[in-house]
Image (cartoon, rainbow, N blue to C red; front, top):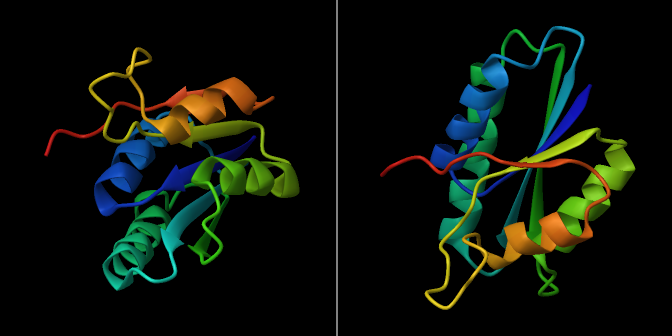
Length: 131
């Protein structure tokens, strides 16, 4: 099984790693992708730290790949994750919900909603950690 993880913070990466801890095996691959604006040094730092979490927390998984995608074109994170999922030939996409607009009826953020609507892969929305 090949899991693709979308993350932006240590907290979301850790929550997804906790979810995978009981599912992913030594035969699986986990690709972790963080998308951060190229002009936001804090977001890029947070993304790099999130990527550092996965190999440590998923030490028993067969292969863990990480990639920071700097968004300098205003790309939609959902589009980047869908592109990565296709390139990696992922079997499942894992994300956590972000802040939800008060007028949102879906209960998830715009990226999660777009992935749920557009992905041909199963999308697992792991509950966000309590901060």
